[in-house]
Length: 99
Image (cartoon, rainbow, N blue to C red; front, side, top):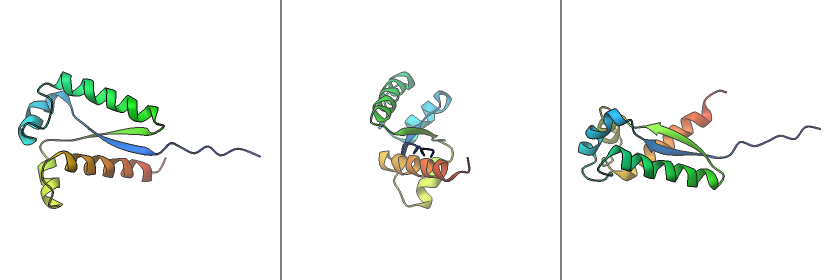
């Protein structure tokens, strides 16, 4: 008899590219760390903590050119809550994707 292993639950985490960070600072109006390096240091620590809790992390990139329209289509403010929803949806898409 073979033992079936279960994959850890996925958690989506909003992720940013360094090249986009100045544009992200504009659309998120003071909600982010002042520099990409500060943001990334905190984000990496957050990912490690989530993984220590037994979850698999999906880094979901936020594009400052398309994210405001995504928010508007869902009647969401361009804020941390919208980033969380976007990341959760990205993790769900990954979970459903064929392996």
